Image (cartoon, rainbow, N blue to C red; front, side, top):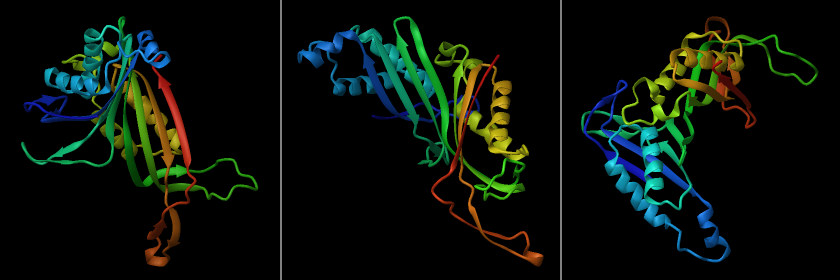
Length: 273
């Protein structure tokens, strides 16, 4: 279901919160629902339509300003209202909007934040957050050379190359409950700040491979944000194929075309010691 909520203008971690918009998915778990599958007994079932309406009602009651906070609040509210639910999972995908004035916005395509929260009677069972859909191109300051070569290797070595990556980033918290509070303070890391750090690192760090790049990104995240316990990356190499190169005075001019469908994918997880 899609949830768009207009809230009084405020500032939180350097950004305004005129609009909180997200796509919400709710999963409920419990032994009490087995009868609806095995015997057709619906007496414990909360209809998905009811769950939809409940989500809208809780959006009105939520006093915070983050999608992570709302996801946690919604999960706890389900447990408090429907005791037959043993565990609730809420997944929130940000629907980003760009603000042009205090009343004018437009949908913003591209990278977005997300959160995955599971809550049971004991508290927060799981909280994973992240930023998806980053697409970054760097025209110089990246390299890939001195890798193993054999008769199957056709890739040329480049001591300076353009680099185009698709990047998803995720993280967990040392104290998840703090990140879900209405006013989490330093216990919460906005995904916009993570995206800014990743862009800045890509811009200024001279990387010798994508592996080298994501390791530097993760190291800087753990240093910059003490609340984080673990960071992970999924990076795809989408570098264009070089189709033509200039000569003489135009030696730096290149013509690029879309790469072949196959592409490299690099994964990395870093944990705080």
